[in-house]
Length: 201
Image (cartoon, rainbow, N blue to C red):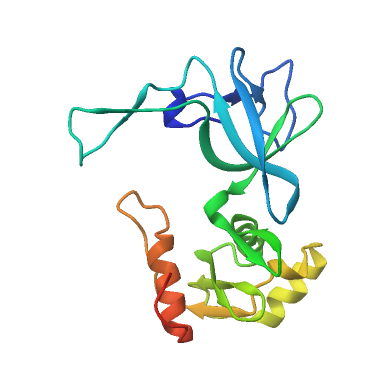
């Protein structure tokens, strides 16, 4: 597990010390802390400190001027850490939906859907919901995708009900960035427009 700001390795599994399903343990001389996240009781937002963190950012609006890091660095990742220090990634802080006070990983939703319709592309996004704060919408290229089949599959897989989207939007292509990764900003706007929810926040 790594990030650009940490040059880039943060945690590793080794042949002697490894644990399936985790990204390993923190490198020597690095420190971490978990900040509480409302709605998540068994994980937190990962902050890092250590000698391999970069000095700062160079930004286009202030060319030639270093914007230094100050203290701990917020990775934006939601992780769980066991008693032996093995780190499990739960998702990105921005990739969670807050539904009636509960935090639901949109990445986990996508993994569930991908297991059901593995030949297609899928993106889960959170949109406003007057009653529960947010709700999850699935944008997919699967022509035969339907909520009933997804709910049945989710129940069989042991997924929480909150993880199963009731709204499914079918598209020919999922919006992507120049890197080839899913463009979640455009996908969320598409979902909000299709559902008639107004301007994306």
